Image (cartoon, rainbow, N blue to C red; front, side, top):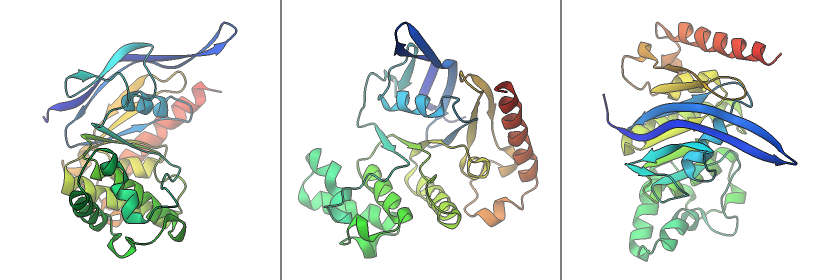
Length: 263
């Protein structure tokens, strides 16, 4: 069993709506994320997946419980975590290369080091030919590749992704999923990914954290054992594996159960 890099310990989050009203988003959630793993947060809409991710990023503060990364409690954003959102976050006035270099420049890396690292990560995400283009000239999938390269270039210990491919068409989406498998294998970056897409969860996850409907509680921790402890690099192969359809059926059943709780 790999060492845990991220620990979520009895975390709850209550939002103050004003005038004495409160909304409990998540309640008493505990789980670990192993180093160099891909952990997927899955559950019905409104179950608090993104809230949990934002607390990991330090963008929200738990009402109770704690989140620990590398032995240190999270008390705000930090360079040990990188965040990628569904919305494209590139700077339109900067070239692709300059976008990737942006965070490194703020962190004080030399021009030579910035360029070298930018070239490495642009190659990793398949954007070398587009280094001098501008984000407005790129497709949605390519703009997300820019965001991934920029975030990885800052060398985070954990990459946090909130529905990163939700706005993409089906073909681009599965190509981006395959890219993330390749990135995980080549960089050993720990990833936590929020999705509501069952196929995406099965394909990407080393471990699935399934949350109940609102307020989000830990319903089940699921390890896709049918993969045999390996990551499958392409979609057409994983769907042929014995156990894939059983896993998909299990997740659909869990989704349906939680959906009925909200009726």
